[in-house]
Each structure stands twice: as C-alpha cells, then as structure tokens.
Image (cartoon, rainbow, N blue to C red; front, side, top):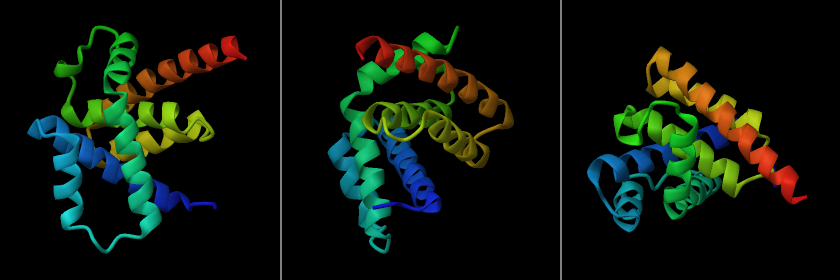
Amino acid sequence: MTIKTGTRRKSRELALQMLFQMDMGKQSADHVEKTFWAERKDLEEEVRSFAIDLFHVAEKRSEEIDKLIEKHAEHWRMERMAAVDRNILRGACAEFMGFPKTPKPVVINESLEIARRFSSPESVQFINGVLDSVARELDAERKKKS
C-alpha cells in the first residue's frame, strides 16, 4: 500500500510530538501513548499507525539512536540540544533504522520541513548536517554487511 507524502509527514509530526512529550515530561512510552491518542481519535488509521511505529522504533532503540546522534553532532551533547531538535533527530534516525526502504534523502528532507515548522532557522542547518552524516555512516555499514 502506498501512503501519500502528506500522510507520512503528519505521522512524522505526531511521532515527534510523542517523543517530545516523553522527553520533556519524563514519561514512560506507555503513558505517552495512552494520553497522546486519547484526544486524537479522528485521525486516519494509516497516519496513526505509522506515527506509532516510528515512536516505537525510537523508544526501543533510544540508546543506540542517542549515541549515533551524539557521535555525529560534533561538540553537542543530547541534553544541550534544543528539545525539538533532538527529537526530530531521534525520529529521523528511527526511520533510518526501522524503515530502511524509505530513501534517506526523503527522511532528511521531511525532517527539515518539520524543523522549519517547529524549530528555528539555525536548527534546520544543524539537523541537516547531523542527519546527512548519520545517513552516510548507516549506508557505509549496510554496504559492509552486503
């Protein structure tokens, strides 16, 4: 089944919001999922489903994702990054890892569009640089394995 770009972007934005809620509220993934969706019952199932899938990958692989981000965000620790930025990065890395068939340039571009909406202009460049570097590393690792 093909999912429209707008549908995917909405899912990515919702996943970002869940990650942000978990991060800033210091809440468990289960709690976030229950409270987040309680007021969003009118969404299309494919939007909701992809958002949940992204959130689950980001949550389950959070340690690995955070290490990867810190490695590529030179001179930046996760806790020093703007909360929105680190969660955009987490969502994108989760998509890189959990949905490898989605082209990395698409994931990066979508993340930049979301950053333009939710973050600062300076953050867009930062996010682009980090994600580009992460994508190159993941591609190199994938080539080594094949």
